[in-house]
Length: 206
Image (cartoon, rainbow, N blue to C red; front, side, top):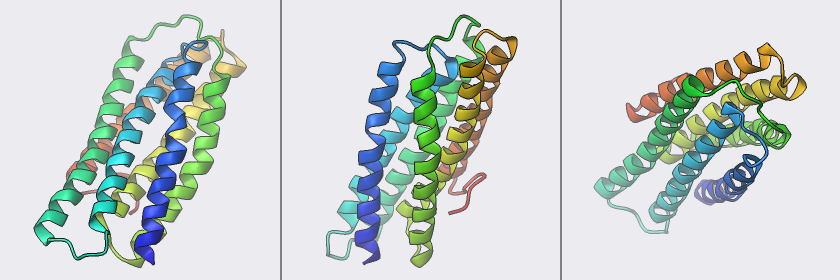
């Protein structure tokens, strides 16, 4: 029962995460915030990691008992995909924050709405994966719990940064909050990604 619930939750993660990069990519046509662009890169990398985790989980839960060595290798692959996605996202956001200019950011409202919805959705997935993993330890569900815990905090930071840019786009505060928001998210993602790759969750609970 838990395996079916885990697979359905992973599939829901894929389906709900897929539109994000597409919508944000379109939103970049009208907005040029560093946080907005970095968020697009982050969501794209995370979507790839979620797809890998879903595929591996399906392979390991097809009804027959998997070979322990093969299972461990696939679980490491899924966890590595999550960790690498976090590190890649963090590196991209760090570069964008350091080298972005203070020019007009354009309309960031679409990205702000997506980030706000992300806080709500990712909070639910984080609690869901956490609950499933506590019912029976599973490396893939544990890595997804860590990923969605990080995604929830990141979306909260992105929402705050974009809200300031939206309310006062031409103020000095908007420039600094946009850049600081990207830096905070970048450092958190990098630390979390390294933690996952080392087999330790940094700043999250499995």
